[in-house]
Amino acid sequence: MPKPSLGRVVLVPADPAVNNGADVAPAIITRVWNDNVVNVRVLLDSDAVQWRTSVSYVDSLDDVEHTHCWTWPPRV
Image (cartoon, rainbow, N blue to C red; front, top):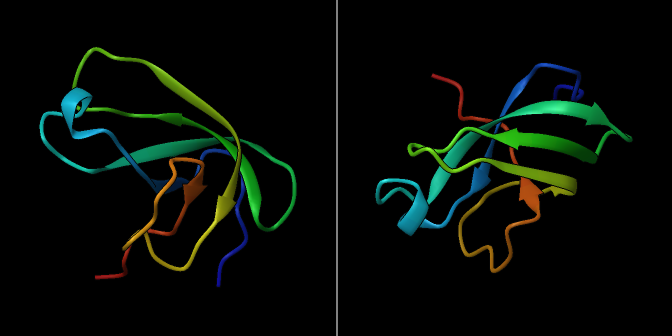
């Protein structure tokens, strides 16, 4: 698994009401606290601005019940 670093793109859960119907959004890492916890700027598909602090790594966003988590995008 890669290590998080400044400027990397990750995925976070999103509220579909402010993300043009999508429940996942890309985010840019703005601060790395450790290998599992980072701060991010969420890039929503709207004019809403979101920052999230101290979000924790999860293997998958499937069945996640909170918004303070992140995961790596799938490799294609």
